[in-house]
Image (tube, rainbow, N blue to C red; front, side):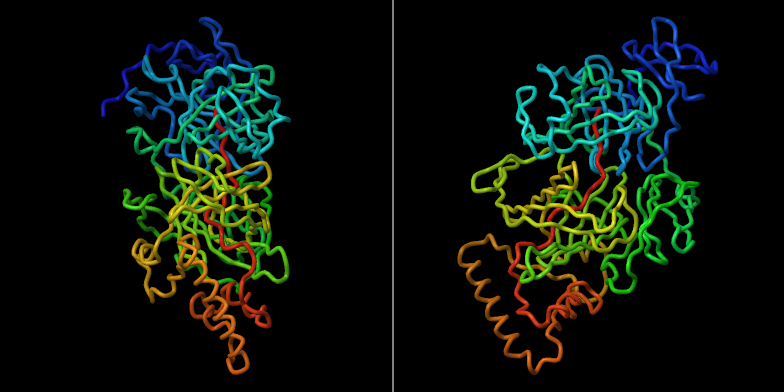
Length: 529
């Protein structure tokens, strides 16, 4: 692919250090000096220093200034970068400069969004922007002639900036950023960094591979391996695989360490119990190829993190359900979750958009109606590996699961953020082949038939559960271990087996509404500019 045609450039000396500062667009209002990090405002043919931004924290992103690509037939170059964050996550927004006649204007933003990417264009808002205090996560809002769902509301801070920007960056000042999503798979952002004139932008998801990118940053494995931090609990070395991981679990004492502040900072952590949890069936660091859609292109994923989660039953009569989630990473695709529940395996990713309500309490997404199966509160019980968001002890989320055949939808709300995830059910054999797992296939085959097949299927399952419970009751007096099936399928140290042992005096039949999250847990957001 040929590189984009060079723009007409304008160059001046930084008034603070004298270093050269170059503008590729006459429309750009400001730039950040690459030598002294001064924020420079362009005033005609002169530059005026108006402040200084912090140093950019280099992370796992493959993008960098000077990279180029194509979108909707137009060539672009990455000319600027903003690095923002809140107390839970940090993300990048890359400023792109298009050749003449580009869609949506001469510039755009390539932003990170829950581990994926969004191409967003600044746009005028026909009406006055609502004040941020009126926007509540989960509420519906009519803006720019469309219905939106408020997905998140965070107090963001601009930590650093690079290169050429359409507006002067204001560092180290917090402001509201509100993301809204719709059923057209779009995300809109209200940026209140300038409260008198909030900025409105519209974006759609993109895959980096589809942008025909060149000039990407090469991440050196040696630089990652040399970033070693001492565990604040036991002193063992912590060596993150990703440069901007927010949390990492010590391999020796299994303490969960907040490494968001980097080397030299006091590392906060919390301890986890050791020895009562089963090892992941897919080892951390493993690689495997899985398509996001059935029959789609196979994508190489690496396992970076592992979570064990459970639901919180509403009453003492409800059986607790446990499940596992593997955080997968691909350099160009971002992140996905491989979810292992008692009902089988699924591969899910967060959505850019949000489904719209449908009749009967369900939701509609891309022409399909998903019926709600259950709503429950989920809690993290154990983690291993590293994660791109900051983990909190026993963090809880309100989860609603939906299904349409083998397609799955999940809605999770944690604090001021709502995340929708879309996934597909998988056979255990597909997981085993993808990661080349050894041992009996029965260890992975926990699949159960969908409850949505038909009324007869549901009735048969209910009858079957009743007969199984009756059989267990009849054999209780002569069977030394009522939980042998859990031990065989999940292992003696698994949460399922331990829970069964604790409840061995009960019926063993679950009456609650849970069943294991379809969606991957996610607390790391990403605003859009």
